[in-house]
Amino acid sequence: MKAVTKLNIYAMKNSMILFILICLVLSGTRETRSQIASPDEIRFYTLEWEGERLPDGRPKLPQDLMERLKNISIEEVWGVLRGEGYLNQFEGGWKILHKDQPFTGQALTALYMPKRPEYADRLLEKGHEEGMKGAMNSWPIDLLIEGDVYVADCFGKVVDGTLIGDNLGNAIYTNSKRGVVFDAGSRDLEGLGKIEGFNAFVRGWDPTYLTEVMLTGVNVPIKIGNATVFPGDAVLAKEEGVIFIPPHLLEKVVITAEFIALKDNFGHQRLKEGKYTPGEIDGRWSDAIKEDFLEWLDEHPDLLPMTREELDNYLKNRTW
Image 1: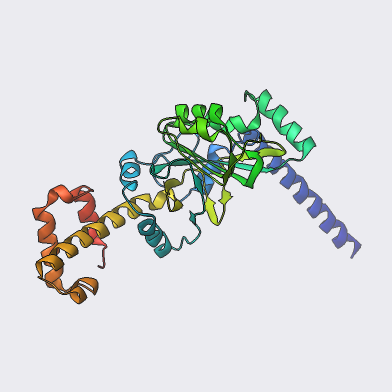
Image 2: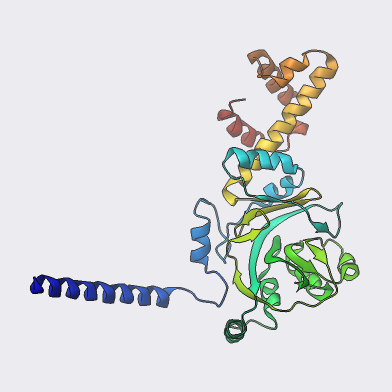
């Protein structure tokens, strides 16, 4: 019995030593940059994406799809995401800098937490050692590239939670040519309003400075109200609210919404002509209506927002 016990203890010690060695090897090979997620970590978050990636590991979203996304309604996007099982991608209730200027972009995420002094000091020191400049709230801005939307979770803090003013706003637009979505506050409403092309969706406007927060993650999954946002998500920001689209679903979202818009256009025209009844158009289409619709598409190629190849590929799996 004692021999068995000694063998068990010996095996446990060896297993523990092996586990520690593995952890040390992995930690030695992993890229570590303070709060910034490594490309391997971002790939893990976005395993479903099969296309090209940016140097930081985020999916590289096709710009033509991002441009077409601007013409799609929040409801159309939500409908497709809901059908795919993504029920936590929309958040409303924003204070918007320019309500009449919707925008799209690719999420660069930042996670802020209430300040814990000793840890915040270590994070700041480590970041400076790695080449980051200034205060922590400027670090995500330095990483922005054109097409990015700076999306930040600062736990809804407005008073003393103003992540940017007009100086940082100018830097953001210079780097990204886009705007921001902050579960937080912002200051310098008038100054930000003068940055042509810049827009901001925030929880409120306040003259106070940012205090008692620390940056704990960049390009990590974050929570924006009721929505979960991953680095690289496609962002659609409109007056109604903001919706975050997983990269691997972007093409399906755009083409499905465009196809539904074409169907609606066709249906409205045929109803005005009196060719079909509302019940025929609103219900499941007959084979005759489907054939009429496809002929109508051939007659109006100028109405297609997608390529004909994209449409034909989509129709192969469409159940109408």
